[in-house]
Image (cartoon, rainbow, N blue to C red; front, side, top):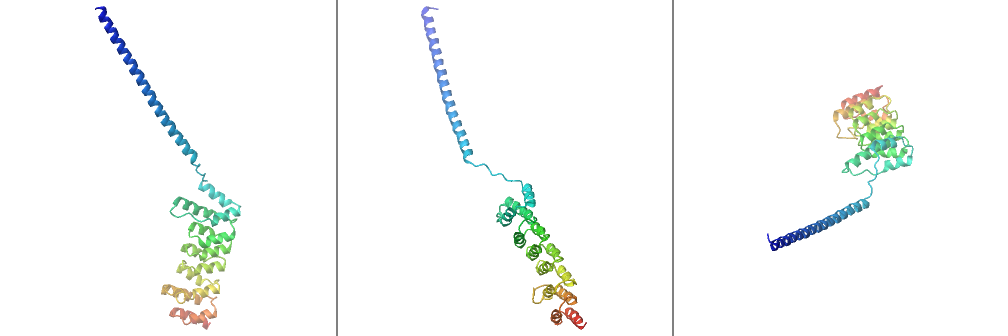
Amino acid sequence: MTDETMTTDETTDAAVTSDAAVTADATATETAAVDAVEGAADATAADGVADAAADTPDAPHVEPLTATYERLRHSTDSAELHEFARRPLPDRSEQAAFSRATALLEAVAGNPHTPEEDRVFLASTMPFPNVLVKLSEDASPAVREAVAANADDKNWLVGRLTKDDVAAVRDKALRNKRTSWKMRLEGAQDPDMDVDTLDFLSRLGVELEPDANVVLSSMVRRAVALNPNASQEILERLSSDSSDEVVHAARRRLAQ
């Protein structure tokens, strides 16, 4: 090989080496640029997440239902209990919130430290059996009377109140249209039933609830006629009743 050839080869090798170096430098530069751009993007995204987190308030802590229930059930804070009793219920479409609120009302209703006027309010306005059952056992006759008059009572609940020790509660229960005819008949047969309630029962199917079942309502009126507490006025009115059975019972009593 001649010196000239060697020189040419060396020159070529040097050029190739130089090109490779340039290419490597360019690649490194591009890689660094890409890394820089991606790093900046990641940093921006992270900043955005951090900003969003900073702008979003922490979710309020919600006390577990059982804990709140027990706290309200044993609370002696009448102001807190009053606030719960009068708090508007969530919309029924908010099922979880609505269920929670009605469950807590049961605890409030069953707490004797809830002001009586609030218990009467709940007894008069709430349609929820769990709340009304609690209130039907209330020590206050006024509360039980309000339950007895509630048109949303289940018939078994209002039927139980027809046996209450307080005449006013029994009277309201027997006047409630949710009361079964069986309970009304038993009320009419009760020898301890007061005259005012007997007067009401003696008008069922005639002046009151004229569309009532004819047979059942006449059975109640007949039982009133046979009740020893029925007044003279009641007996005289029933003696001209549209039902022969009622007339016969009333006239027999008048003849005694």
